[in-house]
Length: 129
Image (cartoon, rainbow, N blue to C red; front, side, top):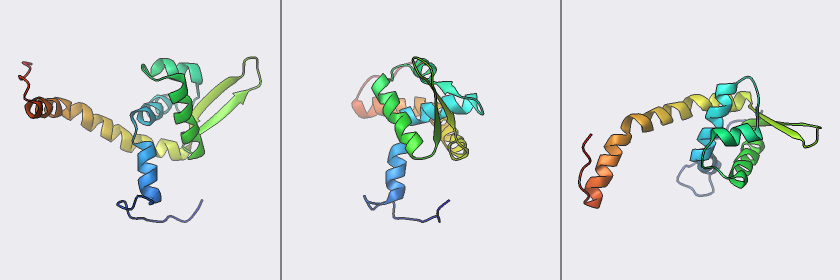
């Protein structure tokens, strides 16, 4: 493990800012959630895609490649025809599940307030609930 370094979040070249850009996407959050639910087990590529409605094969592949490169996800290929590709969270990836779960819970708890504020800002009639 390398020595921890802190940066300046407001500097566009800051590694912390770059990491937040990568882990702050909806697809990353979903991949981490699906793999955390399966931990310590593995999930095949096709199953990940089925559990993440709306994601394209290309976007899932790119997201997984980024997570593997960052050391958050481990990839295992079975030498079968066609190859079976399995993914699981690493210890580092598991440590990200808690913060992302808190963010997901916050979004679910406050979505109606945000939606209400968007309607007000857009001058739209309010929805009755």
